[in-house]
Length: 116
Image 1 (cartoon, rainbow, N blue to C red):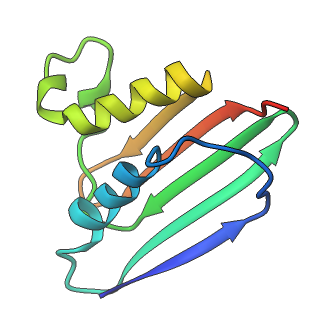
Image 2: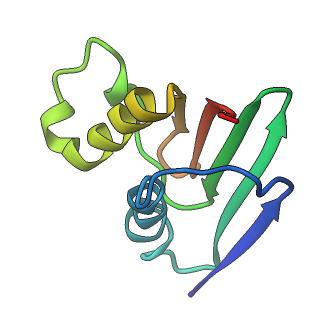
């Protein structure tokens, strides 16, 4: 079992459908679904100056996030995640950071400019 916590401070923005779905699905499937204790996924949205910042954090098993370094040859194993990263960069003119370590959970931060 797991619970979801929301920290929504800003709601007035648009994002393409299913942009966040693979990231949240990964937090459930790979992060907290196999935990013996209580898994927690935190979803947050805030505005900082002219940017939207979205965070997805779980307290799950984590992974070695260095696989997403620019020198990585392991990208073919992570097609869904790489497609999501590319979509955020291409369509939202945004950036994404993935911070994770084995047994230490994962934090994904998406930052993109507000388009008015």
